[in-house]
Length: 202
Length: 194
Image 1 (tube, each protein chain N blue to C red):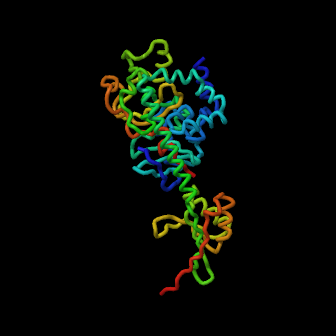
Image 2 (tube, helix red, strand yellow):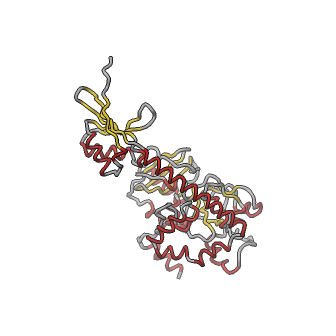
Image 3 (cartoon, helix red, strand yellow):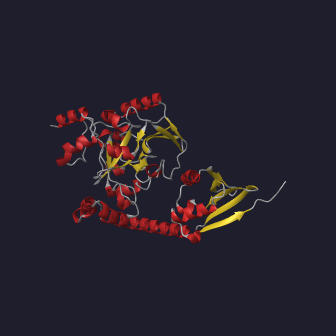
């Protein structure tokens, strides 16, 4: 979605009532972020909203992009926000081979997640074959047990890396990914080094 | 133990945000520098600015660990790809430097009305200046109106009210650091027309 460099449109201040609505929306969408919401968007702060191409709205605080929203899709954190609170979002992991494609803006495909280096939520009762035994406890916690649904926003981490490299909306549920092991998982996401990442506000 | 930490976390108002160091060259987190196309420069930057992190990311075992997870063929492909990317980035940089060396800044004194002039400056964007910011700064410096205007040829230029061409020339050379040879002052007399 943000492959090209973005020139932000007009900046306007968000009404405080709208800002409150945004805050509740964010805490609803990402319940784990709720304890930190005051740190990301302090109550008395003045959010700015910027219009980006393709009907994307970007919310920024003091020239730091925080969240973006494409039309009425779920509001999505900027990757810098994700890096600050990585534990607050559902996460999946891709294998090392997929990183370079993701960072050049390719759509994320299922094999990058189902191979040995990838991680998906284990599913409540389902047993997964790819989990290596020794790390299971920690892995389980990190990537969660709940299968994620289509349309949920997930953070994509990478094998051997600490920070997240992409964020986007799932095109298919994680259960289906595991079953089919084929096809598009996330398209039009926000990834490291894309236009939104490099956007400069002032 | 874990719950204890959780409880104190919720109670305290201490900032919880992690502070991630971003590479000064490619702006990515340093562990992703190898994919950015300027890997060599990023490495040097990191060594200079965050030696501990450099040690962690580029130590021999770390490199070996990352390599062992990929098949040989995939490794080769990745290496080839990154090489290509690097070459591309280097070429782009060289080209940018060249255009910058050639780009002329034109300071034009335009007569508005007998003894009233405006100064139009074009070509600033090629030297990496933000027109809006420059206009604002000049407006403050010269205490006059100063704005970014679209030109007939499709570009944009900064128009400063009043004849400030000499001062602007000095500013461009001294403050912005543009070589004197790249700055041109001309006078553009408006033709008297109906």
